[in-house]
Image 1 (tube, rainbow, N blue to C red):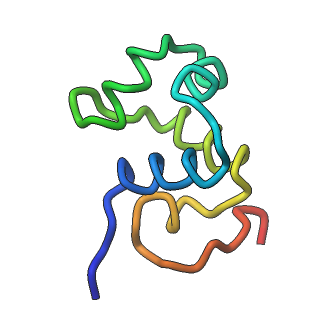
Image 2: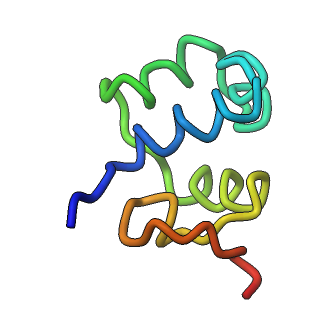
Length: 76
C-alpha cells in the first residue's frame, strides 16, 4: 500500500477545493509563504493546524496524514 504524506494530502485537498495557499494560510493564521513552506516541506505542520485542516475539510486525521485513503469525517 502506498501512503501519501500529509503535504500531498494538503495540496490535493486545497486544489480539489479550488482554494489558494493564501486562503488556507488565512485559515491557519499564516502568510501564503508560511503555508507554502508547509506544503513544500520546508516547515512542519503543527498539530493545532492539522486539527483545523481536518475540521475545515471534514476529514479524519488518519486521512490527512496518509494512514487511510478513506475520507471519513473526523467526527465519525
